[in-house]
Image (cartoon, rainbow, N blue to C red):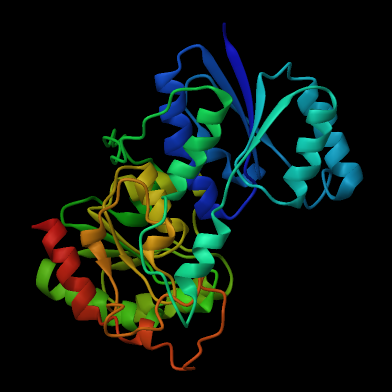
Length: 346
């Protein structure tokens, strides 16, 4: 009997990206199943070209804001049913409200277990329990398993399909006759930001030693302005921040030889497109379960927890530094990151 699953995940961008490999594997392993994925409209490019997956954009800042807005969203989604079950892979107040509406009409709801207690143990300053927790993709997969689907995650990067770049992208980047290395030195929270100064030093090293073209990634506004200054210092580099849409960004990431990212969305976007990521970790730690799908622990640049016992001090990087010097980020040198990149390229 065919199954139709409704899934919710509204934010953050990297967490939404992490759902994609899981949804793909669920659908590949359960050919009688279709999924309706509900997320923020601008994230639609993450979910394109996946058989038996349809995407619904929820305008949570406008039409679907507040209780009345969620009721409107519920009515629209109910009209797309009936659903076998709701997979709440977010577990926040908004999704709890939607869950309750579906439960009231007899639809089965399974919610994400975020493992909050274990994560608190991981970041305690006294009596820290430093051991790997269940990866977030496995937590997402557990939701579908509880619905009754069989899911076994490969944790492998997908094969690159490498479609030709569009004319506009080629005009922006030029032809590819040298390694392309993407650098995304920013993140949402200070405890995860390596910053543009170290990124600039790294870029110059990559050009001198590997003859690489550097593509800077970031958000529009302040990040784009900062990266414009980096481009002035780094010859043969391009600032993509604020200049391309998400769909184009994903296409360009697929053509990179390596992506350098913080523990942030660009790492997960590299995972979607089969690109190896060298990731920089500061206040956070991959033991919390947020390493990019299919990415290797060998490509993590970090200050060892043996050298800095306060690491990790935060699950998301949003807590102020207890030492006030962000030694976890300051201690990650451009040379450390360069060596990781060189290993990947060689």
